[in-house]
Length: 263
Image (cartoon, rainbow, N blue to C red; front, side):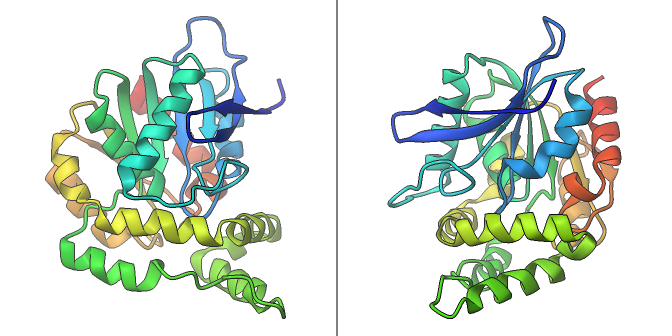
């Protein structure tokens, strides 16, 4: 069955999502949270490969994709609360959860705040950073580098940035991400600001569900991957490919590792 798109209402605004619920009755739900400044479109390749095993739902975080734009975001708990509200409104109670980069940060907090609902947590690029490292990232990833300007120069900046991050692996990928990043130039700043304020290392210790950690050697968060594994020896690990676009560039290994873990 082709992938479907829809909106779900929350108390703060509408959340847009992609989904495939064609799996046989009784199959568990899998919720996917994207990185900044992408959207749920980054999971389409994985969803096509997972639809026979799970009922799959990929949500656009507020400020990204086609979800509503928040006026102000106080902290990461804001995103976690509204995403959980959207998941509940979809009739989903207990679910497997996968998050990439920013989505992994939100996913980890969700697993701590709602442990009875998150059956397992998979993180691509877990960001187990010290306070000093978070401040370093804040300097690079918390400014609206591609705020729209009259001459369109922000589009070239975005295109070049995506190329450096691995998006040049295919023209189709880079073009799609250009559109997502241009749309979410402000949402990116809002989300990243909450991530650098979030003490993910402390949350990480409190996660009680089974965990799978994945990362590519050319991902910006690769230097912290072994640290994440060492801090939680109970978690499984899988090295995948794809720079910072693993679900797009290496969906086969992403899906293979996930299915082995869930099984």
